[in-house]
Figure 1 (cartoon, rainbow, N blue to C red):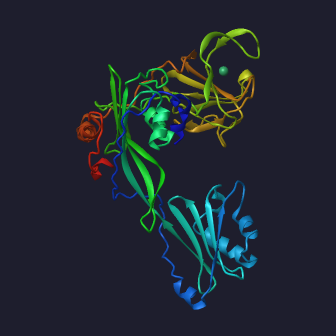
Figure 2 (spheres, rainbow, N blue to C red):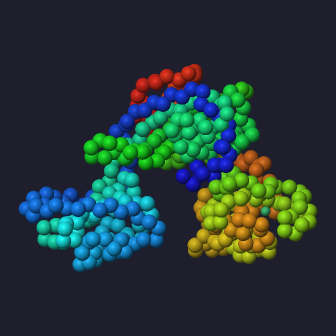
Figure 3 (tube, helix red, strand yellow):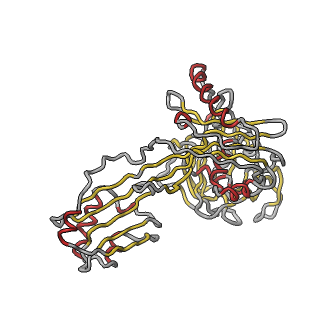
Length: 432
Ligand SMILES: [Zn+2]
């Protein structure tokens, strides 16, 4: 999801859906969202019927900074139940991982005795602490089934992509996932034309409740997509080869994954471009701006644009708190004005592409909170928005055989003339 938000400011225009066809099919595939053994389910029915208790149900939404102990202490639960219930919960869940917005449900009788505590640790994980007949608290949890639904969205650009999404009840996250795939090939900010067409085959993930109801949780993968212009057309499909390597590939098995991300953060706007001469807003004199300034709120995570080694993590004059990373092929990147560094980050550390290295701030000479980002090639500053980094390795000839089969299946679904019509269920093999 981190990637999905990076291009947010760039999609505020562009398309309107001319035609939309949504197609769905519930597969039986299950996602392993929890890697734990479920404890045996507890049956409290006998206890309930014996005591004929009428239980009161309390719902609580966790707010920021609250602890479970605080919540229980200020609830109707009798104090002597709080510690044992929390101890029982700790057997399966670390209460420090409590997140604001999550739901807590308490079942209490009129004397304040806690009978059940239910906590939704995530949309697909429900934890229960139950009072047994002995009075002890026992714990179990339900891992709800995540069901992927494959959807298809296609349209023709008329005004803005954002409008198109709002009209279809899909969220901008989907379009961000889509624009991320093609980010180095299409600049959706300037390259789009009226009449351009897009097609997206993507997963939506739902949790399935016991009663069969489904609730949308988040988007899964974009499985395949095209972007067609008058003279060019782009195709990408997600593929995982037999070695476990996965990513987006074009028709010829070339990877869309590039050695550098286009930007190190989810920014609001570019406040200053790379230039050989501009008036410095604080120094009030003309001098080169050897990087790009990305305006973003204080505290926005800043990530390494490529894998590399931290060579500097210290105050660097006008750049304030600064991180420098050395990459392969004589590339270096610099991240300035940070409010703070990522916890535990040390000079000499290897960092992965997309790993958080610090947070946006305004340390050093900065007029407002933004990230200053410079990319160097052989120690000379270059414009990161203009370079076209090399692709990752293409598929090997052996891998390509399987890929071609998969690609052709995807093309069957995507290469259809507009207007789209429902084209039937999507077989399981599309969701691999
Ligand atoms: Zn700058």
